[in-house]
Image (cartoon, rainbow over all chains, first blue to last red; front, side):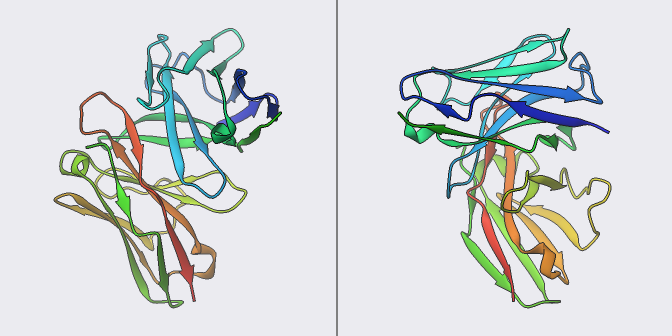
Length: 122
Length: 109
């Protein structure tokens, strides 16, 4: 059974960098059929796709976050990470990591972590 | 365009049929996928591709598409289907980006 688990600080100060890690169990990051994604949901708002990273290290980011987000993966630990710089209160959200892939012509996320709430506040 | 538009809220009587729609230019070229999201829980993929359900998703959920509109139909919704539903698709720009609709809150009366 595939499981993903987010970890990282629950509180980040404005202007600092938010760093989260997603540990993957039951699947390998080196599987070329999958992408590894980050999605967030701000309080009272909808889901927002942030981007994904491929096993090769290729990344694809949301245009709205491209200047501030970066993603990386560590094959030896089978986890992947996301960094978001210069955070503001608007970055307060539940952050989800997910396994994604091309299914039926769409890019879909079939396994998700439980989510981690990150609050940006001084 | 990279936008997907959904009605903010829809209600349905228990056991009736409800259709939740999603509109966007990218849907002319790519299928939508649909996610169910309940408070405090991670989203669940319920429909992808032309009309495919992952294992474990009840067959009362189905998907369809026409032109720039994708639809999620729930035939005989149950009380536990009350949730937010999000459509998602690839961006029409061909850059393998992903976009989500704004979500539809389904109330089962």
